[in-house]
Image (cartoon, rainbow, N blue to C red; front, top):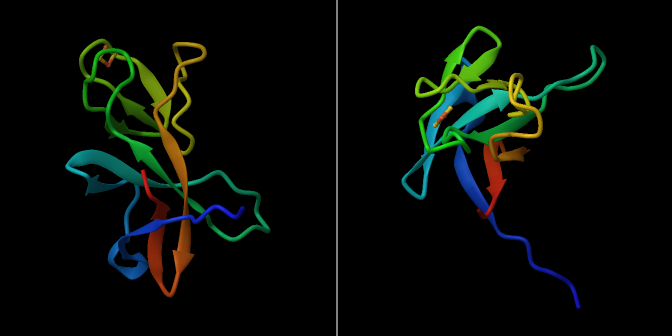
Length: 107
Ligand code: FES
C-alpha cells in the first residue's frame, strides 16, 4: 500500500530574501532557514520550529544561532541542533521547492 504525502504551501521562494525568515503554520511560529550545504550543492532550506523544547520560549536569531531568551538554550540556525545542551533540538523539517514555492510536508 502506498502512502500519500500531503504538502503545504509555505509561500513563494522569491518573497523570502533574508534568512531566517519568520513564518506561521497552524498558528505556530517557525523559521525558514538555509540548510547546510557543500560549495557545489544547490542551496536547500529547512523549516525550524521557533518553540524552545525546554519550556516553550520563542527562539530568536542571533548571529549563527537561534537563542531562547528565557534560559539561553542555543541552537544551530541551519539544523536546529542545540549548541549548548547536548541532545536537544528544535523540530526541523526539510523544505522542498516546487513551481517556485516552498513546500512542507503536512505537520
Ligand atoms: S524555555 Fe527556552 S531555554 Fe528554557
